[in-house]
Image (cartoon, rainbow, N blue to C red; front, side, top):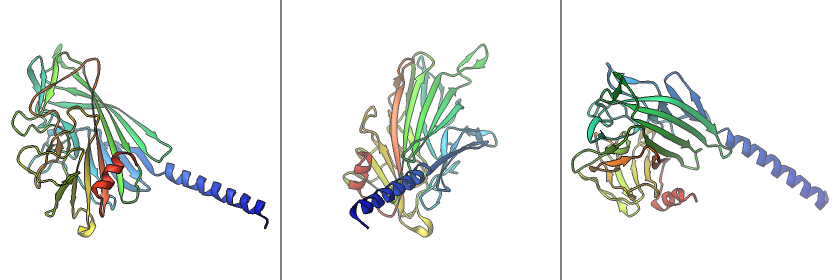
Length: 314
């Protein structure tokens, strides 16, 4: 075979491989709507479930607009819902203790008191790189905010969840949460104490050997917030049969108050990059308050250097 034919064969082979790879990649992450919510899968394996329908225990702690289950790469469930120690906590969620209009409380989204959410819309999109996007629209309501005897929304939330396909030993999931006030002089804040927990949270199963680390190495949980610029890695026996795995929570550098501090717990509670903390912040009726976070679900080892490269898109 002469060089011309050899080159032609190579070009055809490369083209075929490229087409096959493109097809396999774009087919990786899929989103299926169900009666209760949205199921995300990757090559037939469960990735996460977004709760759309209202869910409660005997009519109490009614909630929606959160992720549970979140599955590990080997199919292990990582999150908890209605945990006995904190029945209001729920999978991957974002909520605030203080919700004030004109200085008066209209509810507590964290503890689910005088607080209701209503998912009004879900939209999905598939990207060429194999990622899938879930867009949601959610109304916040309260029996303390009514017009003509009827509850009306005081805040509209539009969130975008981007689920990337698995890369080697990890999967990245991005969150963008946009909060737009529908009522004037609306403010939100965290727990009105020195802890101030508030915002994006992960109620995950915590093995007895759980360890926390960040850019600068080991992070030790305390009663109050601790510092770990950029991210916190939560590692332990998360995999099947106790194999090493974990989850990384990423605080986006575009977030207000970046780097945000962290409330971390070794047992019986959630993990939380705190925003805004104890002090309340205004939510505009014109420009949404935008918060961005990411999750890295991984197996085996994931070094701080590798995490930083993933965050930077390298």
